[in-house]
Amino acid sequence: MKLLLLTTGGSCEPLIESILENDPDRIYFICSGGDRSSRRIVTGEGYVCGKDPKNPDEPNILTQVNIDPSEKEKFEIVEIDDFDNPNSCYQACITLISTIKKKYPSAELIADYTGGTKSMTAGLIMAAMDDPSITLCVITGKRMDLIRVASGTQQKRLIGAKLPFLERHFKAAVALADRYDYAGCLQVLESLLDTPDIPSEIQQRIQKAVCLARGFREWDRFNHRRALEILESYAGEITDIFLCLKKIMRSRALLDEKYKEFCEDQKSSVVYHGYELVEDLLLNAKRKAFQGLYDDATGRVYRALEVLVDARFQICYELNKNDLDLSKLDETLASGYTQGGKLGLKQGFELLIKWKRNDELATEYVKRRKRIENYLSIRNKSLFAHGYTPVSEKDFEKFLGIAEDLYESFISRVFQNPSEPVQFPQFSDIFS
Image (cartoon, rainbow, N blue to C red):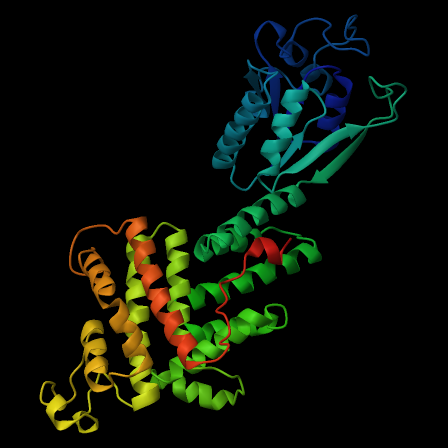
């Protein structure tokens, strides 16, 4: 079924040409309303059309295309009262298109913007460009002056409205990615890929964005292995961030048996210090805070501190604080713990201080102990932990600040010129 949307006004001849050329099953005449209604050229009695609108000498459009006014299934008239307001015209056309698509979901829609006021044509064009399945149409011909096309030279020109639609929605997807909302970004991008006949250059651009968004989404979920597999295709274009991912995976392998085997199979020569997973958690926390998810972000800062002390025990003392081997501790110290026991964040730092007082991390923690414990209590009172009090932006920023200060002070004491952690790239930079 073919449906024609036709902005109506001015000369009748190009509108009649459009109807005859497009041969629709049903026509929607979009007319100006009120005292200046263009309905008259569609159904008016007597002579209402002609080469000279001021001196009409031809019958209405329906008569000229052999449609009887009683054949309501073949046409519909939609009037826009505020026809010189592009916003009103756009909204009227959006509403009309929505109604049509619900009633005729599989129909072919052609939007002809040849006639009508400038605002009416603008409204129809904008509304049609919101839907790539709609084809734009304009009747063109040889111009004898700046006012009208010469009679008898009119030709139908169909225009695919995909490019503006694709560009607008791609920009929206990029904006979502810049907010680290990869799920929302992918929802937009994957719907774009369903658009038929996308130009190959644009399709490649969308597919690249989909791949990157999927990779960063998996990374954001701490599914580092899957992220590596997805992002590897574009490793040469995101060199710094891809290298960071490899370091994080090596760091994670020190604590996670599943990653240990995978990293050994990779046989990578990447240089890492072992605490990159802490950096990853802190950067992840910042991304959540950027979205206003402060409780979530605070939980990730807390986990970063846990991983920091976990990694310190494992790297320097081969002790797993989540499965204590008391044989590694002094007998007096071991008496206060349980074989195979698990220590929380605060208990872990306390053990490190008692056991290895001069350890660099223990030293830096002692300097900040009171402030850290204060912010731990804020985290513990949140709904994500043990209470019901939301974490404010201010409290998150202070907690993040003290955690970063502890981490950076520790790292600078242990390593010379450690590499700076890299936040996820902005899609607006990649696709600028």
